[in-house]
Length: 92
Image 1 (tube, rainbow, N blue to C red):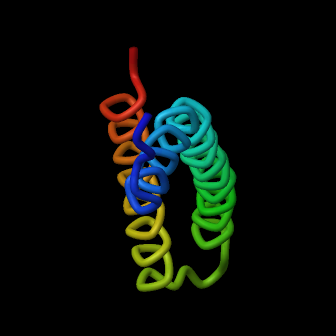
Image 2: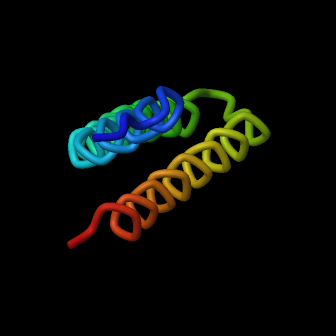
């Protein structure tokens, strides 16, 4: 019986470890993406509240109101992108 070269044994071991860990890592990354989406949902609610505060102020600072609306729309778009990425990368 001939022994494999040590370098080949190490290469095989790394491949097998990577193969075994793949489902766990995929699930971990999906959960990380979902956590980021939850954070974005929280930011969306905060930004909506900020818009209402700006709209209720006297006198209305239209620049701040517009900036707040822009930030809200950007955050919503970011959340949509997260959803799309998660669906494409981890969907069934």
